[in-house]
Length: 441
Image (cartoon, rainbow, N blue to C red; front, side, top):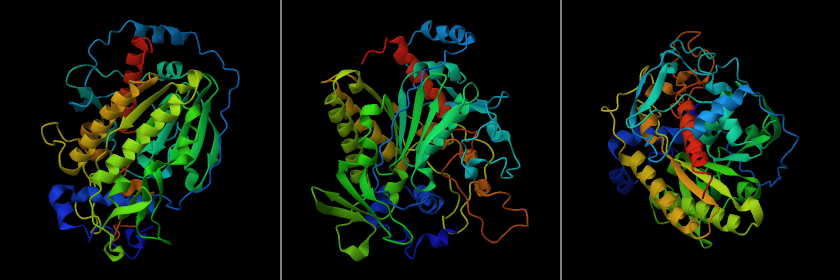
């Protein structure tokens, strides 16, 4: 589907001068995710509220060889947690744990090698934090830590991208079984690992709060109700032991914002005669509503089901070179060095909002107990990986019949395997630290 088919309105040409001044010029390339998200994903709103039933078969004990691996977790001290957000990408000849042929949960548009990407160097880098070591992912340790638990990934297509990466790494030691799917493009799915009685769910909710998505057939703008959490996922909170939240890119699209039943403004909808506002305030309000809703609802649940870990993944920058509607690409084949790029502009502002709202929520949650809220800060390490996207290889062999006049590029999502696997390595280290601390909240 070509970008021209997004709709009759260009979502970027009407950006106000006030918004433009708040975003550094170089970040205009980050706006292509909006076009890509509008075409690459199905945008039909889902009003159904199908309840997903958790499956609890008798777990099969993990193999004996696991325990020697897991015992090393207890031997590590986490007195000074590492800042995994600062570091550099270094060569790693070992390569990834899996590939497209050994993992069955990868979206076709993220199978970069099978789609004809000729270079493979992007697979041989690892993230090296400046202050500590980031171990290679240990799938059996991860499964042990979430045994008999339910992990939900909630948000946009980057939530899906990260979960599929995680499933691929876990599948190297245990088989994930798809036990539920619903919605167009399978936007609501659940996998079950029989070996550890562990469930992983995906909930499509790009705003986190209630809303309607723009579509080619309907409105050219999103509608968001910033003070109402999306019940499509929130209604299942009682089932969750961990929630990983991912959002951001959809807030850059033309949108109308409601609060208290009234329109408080809009972004790039000049024909609606609403007050023009940028997306930073709505984004903050949406995250605040989400975290407050989790805390309040879990507080009202009695027993062990009121305990939850909440992980907010920070914004993942895109890497378009050139204008989105003029054959913008992401053709680099190596990472940036850490001194070449700094987080700033729009990327930095979104990250700052996410960090601040998690800290605010931590203060609120501390009054009740039973909660752990943390940030999975991937903005810097993602910024340094312009080589990790599908680019033109979101479609099979785009140059098989020569070089066409126009090739659609995906410079938002990540090849699998690829840099996004590192996000799950950091997630595991966070979980290991919690285990070392005795599970205290």
